[in-house]
Length: 168
Image 1 (cartoon, rainbow, N blue to C red):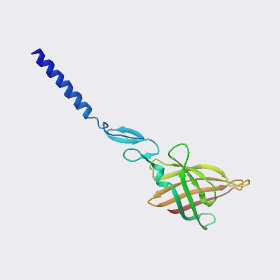
Image 2: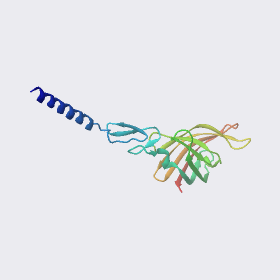
Image 3: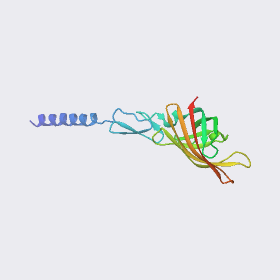
Image 4: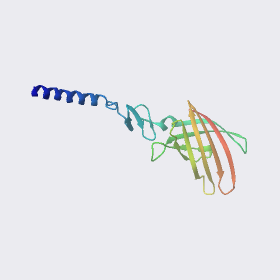
């Protein structure tokens, strides 16, 4: 009888251990740039997709051509910008020819993966000219909209602008 009880105990423990490991919802989930939580991936900053393998900034990369209207001057300007990978974090992007000023600004992809923020930054455009930019942008399909403020340093002049562009 003791032997039968030991055998039943052994199989009971084996069955219980099997049930516990087979109930792990993260057992077969590979979150490449994230952590599994109850069978779903919680992606690290800057990553998305079911397995956290897609950089959020990837959808923004490329050239965009469009029109811009600014509050003060009210004129329409047409130009092309180029968005490329920034340095440091996978959330960083670099926008070339920002505002049509032939300068580069840095931006950070927001958590939603559909928008970015241009933090306040001063950019030199030559020996005697500098601008300060801040703003935000969002992408919907192939359309990019950027709202920003530009200050011409040393003059006190500023303007609010909206750039609407299509990806080339």
